[in-house]
Image 1 (cartoon, rainbow, N blue to C red):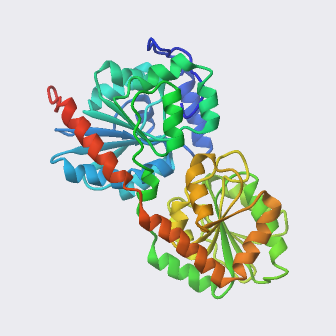
Image 2 (cartoon, one colour):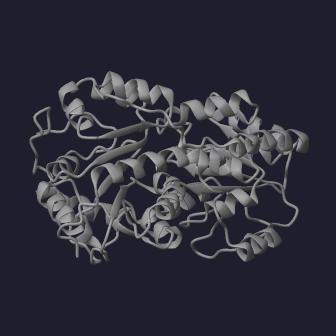
Image 3 (cartoon, rainbow, N blue to C red):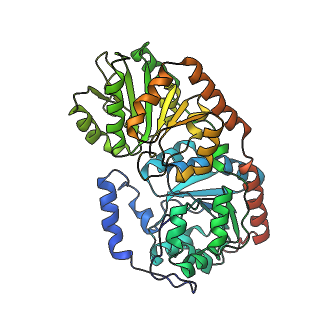
Amino acid sequence: MRETGAAAGVGGGGARTGALGPVGPVRLGRGEARGKEGPLRRGERFGRASLPRPSGLLVWIHAASVGESLSVLPLAERLLAAVPGLRILVTTGTVTSAKLMAERLPEGAFHQFVPLDHPGYCARFLDHWRPDLGVWVESEFWPNLIVEADRRGLPLALVNARITERSFRSWQRAPRFIAGLLARFRLLMAQDAASAARLRALGAGDVSEPGNLKHDAAPLPHDAPALAALRAGIGARPLWLASNTHDGEERAAADAHRALVARYPDLLTVIVPRHPARGAAIAQELGSMGLAVARRSADEPVSPSTAIYLGDTLGEMGLFYSLADVVFIGGTLDDTGGHNPFEAAHLGCAIVAGPGDFNFAESYADFEREGAMRRIAGADELAGAVGLLLGSEADRRRMAAAAQAIVRAGSGATARTADALAALLREAGTRRAGHA
């Protein structure tokens, strides 16, 4: 469960729940229909591994989805370099993250889907992989998986922990439940002071604050020929990007586009939805507004008449951030809580964001304080903010430079987290007995 309230059956005493078992297949079927799950490796969601366990030391890192999994890539690289013979298993829960991990995991690391949170599935997963250390990232609290791992004596670490104010209030309604889960982690490392304080208030013991792993992540990669082809097709047209958008934000971006074309008649608005599977529905919605939409997933080119270019593909955010100078970060005009600003900052973008930022509250505050981000109160201010930046190259350069200064400073979180995990691995011992 991800930053949710109490689930049945796991309180301070650590009982388990099998309630998910009957609905697991139904949930996967619905996920496949929405484009969030894939049928080819479905067995992994029931704990059936599709790979043999490698010999020797194995660290298991669980990251929920794209953002979390990308943030652990430098951490995995550092651990592999520090511990000879180590192998790393990374689990995630989405098809998008699985594809990205297949492309970007370093040698010595590999991916599997996390099992559904049912005692039997979790037991099957753990009995096959027999990891020497389990590392949970950010806010992933799957009760049965945590309990089953702890029952087997597996040392657990929670790193880059993030507890928002909203989730904190939710967990306060089940104090014994969350305290019981947190007590099973031997190492807790928060990404910011606010999350650390909330973890302590929820019953965690010693919580360190090494910084945010996402701050240390490398710039998102892109395909250079694809970027050159896009730039050639777009030419000198002014453009801006709405990235990681959610339902409702695409219409807000389209409304901003229509407001801006009076000043910029050849404007191109690029929209990259958080969930690319929504591409067809978005194209239909924006087309009904009288806007010409080209979909990247359908290999539709940008023509002079194209108003909206829809980046409904997987793993190309680096391409779109490299293309745009002005970026609106989605998930900030609804209750999503915002998305990672460091990705845009790394690639020289002037950033605009709405008021919703609880996922990255401290980071957004840093960006705003340093003049690296322009905040808007709502969708009706989006056109104005984008228009000001499109009209001022000096402002764009100043904001981009401020953002890049933030990311260049780094946080050192990766090095501190890797050192702590390596120490925990040594403390726990190799536990090689029975390894294949």
